Structure formats: C-alpha cells, structure tokens
Image 1 (tube, rainbow, N blue to C red):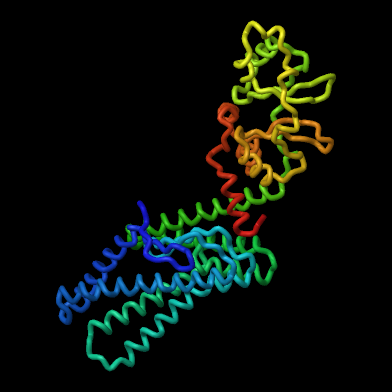
Image 2: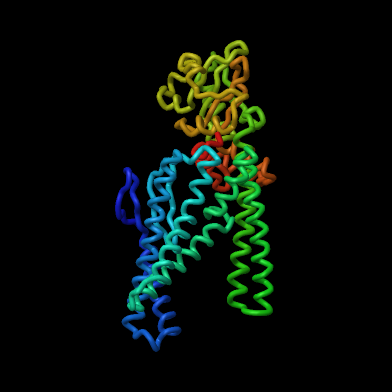
Length: 407
C-alpha cells in the first residue's frame, strides 16, 4: 500500500500509511466502548464517540509532533533521514546515515520518552487545575495524558528497536567504548525477557487464560527467534568485516593455450562442467597472457575455425575485474556487485591469477562459517545461478554496516 505525504521538514517527507487510519478508527471505537461501559450514565452514545474520536486524534497527533521534534534532534546529531512513515503507534525512519557516536545516540533515544512524559505532565496539570466544568474536555485531556505516560514507559522497555533498547546499548557503548558490547548485551536482555514471557505464557495457557497464554507464548517464541537471528546477524557482520578472500576456496581457472585453434576451443567448451562460467584464460609458455569469452565462437565462421587461433582474439588479463587475495570480504562483495557478470579474478601479491570468485562461493563460505553445510546438489544449482544462497542479502548487510559506521 502506498503511503501519503502529509508535510515536509527540511526536505524530509513525513508520510502516513493507510494502516494508521485503521488504528485511528479501531482506537476510537475501543475508547467509545470503554466510555459506554464505565460511564454510560454520564455520557450518551454520541458523546462517547466524541470522546473516543478526539482522544484518538489528539493522542496520535501528539505522536506525530513528538516525531517531528525527535527528527530535529536526529539531524543535529548527524543522522541523514530519507523519509519518515507513520505506521500504527510509531514511525519507521528510512535512514541513509546513522549517528556515529554514543552520546549522540543517547540523546536520540531519550528524546521521545521525555516528550511523552512532558506532554503527560502538562495535560495532567491542566485537568487537575482547570476550572472548566466541561466534563468531555477534561475526560479527553486525562485520557491523552494517561496514554502519553503509558507510551513513554513502553518506549523505555529495553527491547529491540524501541528507544529503551537503543538507550541501553548506547549507554554501554558510551562507558565501554565498544558499540558491539552494547548490541550484544541488549540481545541477551531481549533473549532473557523473551524466555520469561514464553514461560509465563505457557503457565497462563494451562492455569489461567488459554487466550492470553497463547498470545504471550507466541510473543515469547517470536522474541527468542528474533534474538537468535540477531546473534546470527552479528556473526555474519564479523565474517564480512574480518575475513579475507584468501580463506575462500576459489573456482579454478579454465586454461587454454595461446596457439590453440577454435576447433580445440570448441571441444573444451563442450566438456566444461560449470555452465555459468564462460571465460577461458590464455597461457603462453606457462605465463598468463589474457582471456577469451566462449561467445567469440559465434562471431567466427565455422570454416575458419582451423585457421584462427585463440591468442589472436584474447583480451588483456588486466581488463578482467580483479581483487587481491588479501582483500577484505566486504570490499570484495562491493566490487563484485559493481560487475556485470558477477565474477572476479583473484590475484596474489605478484599479480598472478589464482582463481575466480563469485556470489555462490562467497555465500557458501559465509554459511560454512555459520555452521551450515549445504548438500552438494544445492551448491551445484547455486553455482549455476551465481546467487547468494538461502536469500542472504550480503550487499544490503554491508550497506547497513556502513550507514551505522561499522565499516
């Protein structure tokens, strides 16, 4: 579903997703029902709906205003925001660059809860000291204040991407000097809380309420799986950051002699095992001199195959995209994604070719480091398609690491 832009601030579009309106309606309906059940003798049905509608409107409006102020703090701390979209009870920020220091992240994380508490305090003071006898207005003000207070405390829970989670890991980062320590500690907290919710949900399932126990069990299980996924993500980041090309088993080069004619070239092509690899590397007296694309056969008449030699049609080996065997894995992936074919030639310190590297080789290496060993049948299919296995989006992970300043 397409989001609708409501305004712009400093070139940053603020958008509302259609789901936001569904929440607006459902919350209005829920609040009006609550008013009818608890204060039906004071308010009629129309007044209950008015309270429900205006409570929802002012509460969700306060969330938007808090996000605007939060955006200014983010920009001041060096964050580059592409756009902001409001979903349900919060917003999703599409960020091009994150804050690169711990203190700045602490300020960013604390601003929304503080704004919620400040808003709640002001509204409570208005409702307590107001001389107005308008019960509907006071009811709305009190409800919006309570919701802001609740939302402020909710945001401070140290879970995942909530402000409380970001605040906890940023504080640890500030005092320890290590960003990863904060992230790992937060993940352990999330895992512990998820196990607690899962166990409590199972107890509720059998002893108290099946419905609420089932919901809590699913939430706990979801949290445990998310924590495990986050742990795997940490491992992938470390593999990309510290591993080198020299650790990967390369695809061997297919060789052909400089003075081989095209009939001999055609026989080699027919006997090849890897259908995805179309390059042959030319040698002359044991020296690598260039490479040829097997598609060159289509440009030469069949009658001239015996008279034409591969060496006369080769390209310089320096023109083949290459990396050093000592290059970091993340840099290699970036360079690989810039190529058209998805192949890179790996060179040693003396610029002598060692082999070919592609997406499937890198992907299998990462999986093996994580402890996943794929069956040979799947590996062969991946080699043919030259894809990262199991949908691992390594380029996107690298881009995220760069945005966060980890690379």
